[in-house]
Image (cartoon, rainbow, N blue to C red):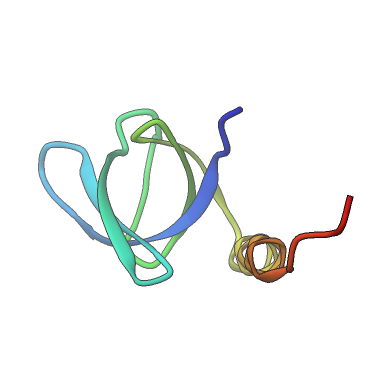
Length: 77
């Protein structure tokens, strides 16, 4: 199973590549699938490509939800 995650664009270069921050970890991703992207915007990234932009509120809610899932202790079987 693959998961697409939101990240915040922190820089963009001339080659349609952006550095995206995922909560302290940054990666270079292609923004070639987006018509326009700007520093400070949140994007959904999967397999190294920004698939679409999301608004700040939606991105922050998704990030908080994912953090809650990852911090939850395992449930007994």
